Length: 346
Image 1 (cartoon, rainbow, N blue to C red):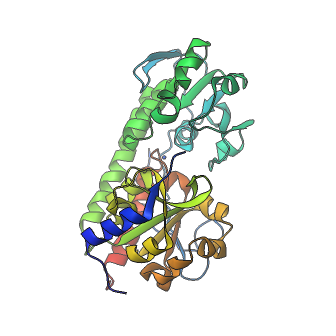
Image 2 (image 1 turned 180 degrees about the vertical axis):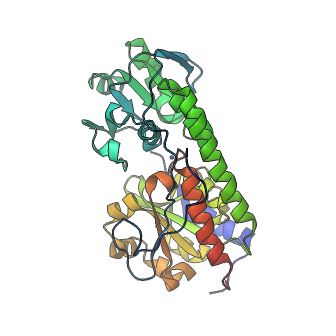
């Protein structure tokens, strides 16, 4: 099938996509791990784990509480106790893990992909319809939201504060170092947060350096099992995955149509997009039901250059779908994998 020009592709995808409603170490050790070396489930032949292996970790910290911080909805909040924290997303939990505050994760999203989130005493649904009563019934000491759209503009954080529960929002749509810095500060670990943020920034800079040497920018389609009422979706222009793909030297398919968030892509749109790489997170692959189920959900993926080559790359959720402490490690791993692909003939 002939390749479409960028304008033609954008027009095609605009028709095909429907926006849905409702992430001290060295920076030189990351790489793309093959299926037989990654410590994860074995993948089909041709598939590949792409895993950053040097995620920054501050180790145990001594919290300096109370800590007064400015929430991203503009309100100053004083945190006095984080021992029962409701975490709005794995980006927040990843910072808590890096600070050795795993045991403080009291409630996590039901689709959490982090170890501390899965070990939390409570699992909870956090979306635009989450009510203050349900959150307050968990009897937590702190709420940390990760979305102005879901936790701020909805009025949830304000209602929680009015009821006496400290609520801080660290919005997901900001660079990873800023998010890490803000999240650590609210837990009374500002100094450790500065160190973590600097390490993440150094890794992101290294990934950008690697990407600058690519012979070309391979086209990447990031597919997810969530985001549109249970329908399979692709990552839109404002997702953490899209930012990671761009930084690592790839062209994100979801950008071409200018869609936001995770959106449905028609089978015809998949063929028209002609991705060189299919990128999926470990948890999404699990939700799909495995490799065979991925093909059955998106059968025309096989008709793309990526599908014909069996070029499916699997990344940890915290390195792909969230901007947080693992973003830099994931970016370096993806940049190296794309660099190797870019050197091949398209």
